[in-house]
Image (cartoon, rainbow, N blue to C red; front, side):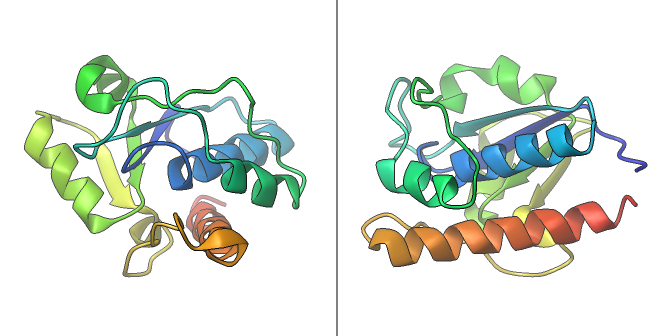
Length: 156
């Protein structure tokens, strides 16, 4: 696989559900394919905070498909940690709004920034599953998985 990136950052609102599920998928994908790619995630919204626990629903729906999200992972507010944004050479966001917020808050050069749907060659956002129970979290999980698989096909 001819994958040109070495550090991926996944960005959503508060870094407790969608970005964590995306990070889990990407780490699993790179591990299974013997690729040395670093993956991290963070939140960009005004209500993002350092130190929040990952959503239990996110952990449970990922566990259903054999991907473990760490019990001791805590959320990261990217506005307080601009160095994380600078380390990444590929930034994937869950929505167009997240992408706009990155451009509003950070002066970034030479960064590839795409929504997950753009990465997959599609349009649209992956909706926040909060308050939508397992059905919402499974829908988000499945959309994230689809986008990652489709996006990675471009580098085969």
